[in-house]
Length: 108
Length: 116
Image (cartoon, rainbow over all chains, first blue to last red; front, side):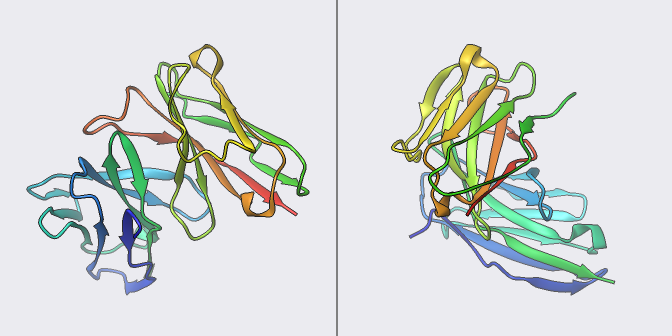
């Protein structure tokens, strides 16, 4: 079983829509959780950390469910610039494990 | 602040040839990482340095891959000999300290390797 699994998508949504997707992780002792964003042919960049109580950063909301071992990301009022691959990342033993990514395409 | 620098950006070689990649982390960052990202997959950690010491190289194919970080700054990753399945983007990242609770890794632009 992979350490981090994501729905690859693609999620194809119109501008202004809300899109949400999850990832699951296998190690119940995982320490920290993150969402990274990767644009086509670019390097990954940290989007946001995920806190146990859930957290927002503008139009982005991240949730963590330790009992079920999943993390979610919700994007409200989607913009064309949100089109990217979103990587779910989990910290285990001071090592980051990346999911394969969920691709989101926002259309005009 | 300058970001993580990598070179070359692109490399095409034939199988069984050798190749080397170079990385210059963000100034002052103690920890340096090399990742391999195969098309359609997430980055996979190959090796992690803390200053000039190896912290984790459990996923580095040591029969063909080697890496060093002399003087705790720049790093090189070498593949010798290359195989077709080594075609990937090789990403270098750095962080200020060892991966902690909320430590951010900053990635370089990557080196795209194609092995023919």
